[in-house]
Length: 490
Image (cartoon, rainbow, N blue to C red):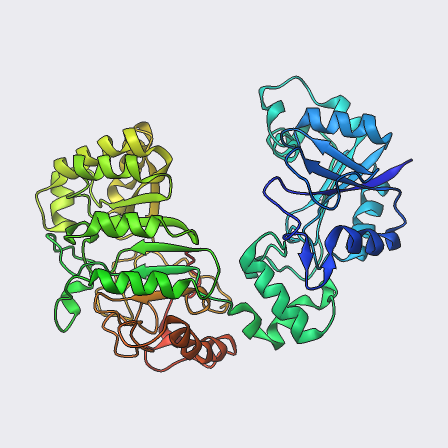
């Protein structure tokens, strides 16, 4: 049996992505994989690639993605019986795992072997020649092979490989093409002075949790504190005073400050008020979308102002804009009880009109509380018929500031470090950078973008993250009582 390895260079990757510290990863991985006892190491590169691998006798140029036709060509070109596909952008790849997965695949005569708990930068997919010939003529054949197999899992002999520790809770891909994960891996490398073994990874992170504190990935910005509704679950009424509109100059300062981190991030315009009530909302959305580091812009709205003007704007603004409309009601009566407004028909029509132009970039959001439970099924039936994606939102009581209306508690039994302290910034309309979203009035703020650099404020928040990671919970706000630690933005 001839078992070979295919180092797969992603279509979006360049030689910069294939460099880590002072290593050119394809060369480093070929040397590292020599310990696996596998056969030839091949490279798969897209037609657009023109880097250091070009001209290598083992470099196979592909067109398109790794679909069934791609794999047929690979097996013809290599003469292999089994091929182990590995991401070429894997600085920490552990050859012992690859060797073990290959042994597992061959021992159980599998057609396809993969892992669900190992991160991409540590795992592989192993494909047999027999599998390719066994794939039936199905419509999904132009999709990536792994996706086809998962959609037809009962048709093949598949082995699922599991290995401890399970690092899925860290949400790290360990791929150098991901700028945030690259930063984390660089910090791990500096902390250890070596390429770590996978078995040691959790212990290394737990001993050096600061490696995770790379920079904010999610900014929630309170564009306006004004709102025409008075929702029963809103914290706005608990504030000492209503927040105003954010000065556009502060937005510019925030966006400029994020450039210092040089990491991709998402901006959500939310907070205590309705962002579309800001007089410069569209200009601010457009300038935010124009930032190269901004991956997406989320507008969280009550839907009252998501009218024809907004529809025209998002059609011109490009694909970065995503809209979440909060609508907690199935009809005018249920809507009025929860939102204290008579705008159900207006909001519903705005959503339906938005769906026609926004498509997959539109979501509606309903809270999982006692008042919505009786009509939740009907709510899903109606909006799914109309092709609108639904977000079922957990209620946040903001540490008891508003009444708890939940009818179930879905909190995990084991507490993990708070995602929000690791990745998020919550900034109120006056520029206050709060401790977290629970610090709604900024009483535990770590600074203001009006008077300090965003990087300096982020550094001040690092001890908060480190203490929380060590389960030394902050007293104000009361982190020990918080149940938002497991919710995740991006």
